[in-house]
Image (tube, rainbow, N blue to C red; front, side, top):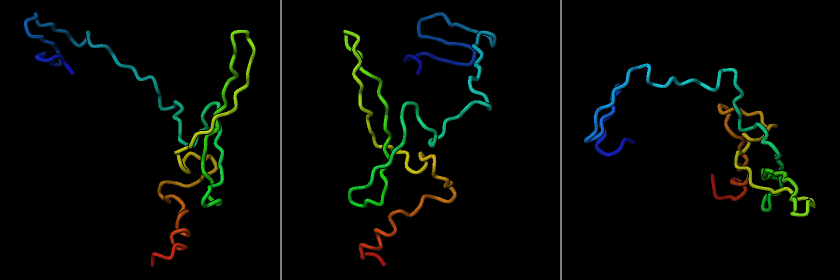
Length: 126
C-alpha cells in the first residue's frame, strides 16, 4: 500500500511536497519465472522429508485407521559432544485420504463413505 497521500501511476510516483519521479519502461525490473512447466509440483500424497505416514486404530471404532505423521528427529548433541537419540514425534496428519500414497481415488469419485454404517447402526435415520 502506498504511503498516505502518494499517487502512483504506471510511469510516475508523486509524494506530497516532493519532486515527481518519472521512469520509463526500461526502469521497471523484469520479472522472471523461477518455476517452469517441467518443475516438480508437490502433491498432498507425496511423502515429506524425515517423516512417514502411519495409521493408528481408532479408540471408539478400531476399524478406522487414524492417520498420523511420524517425524524422525536428529540426535541431540551435548556440549561434551555426546549424542542422545530422540524418539520420533507423532502428529495428526490432516491431509485425509488424499495424503495417503495408497489411496487411488479421484475428486470426481469423492471420498469413501466411511461413516455410512455407523450412521445406520445408530438407528435414528431412515
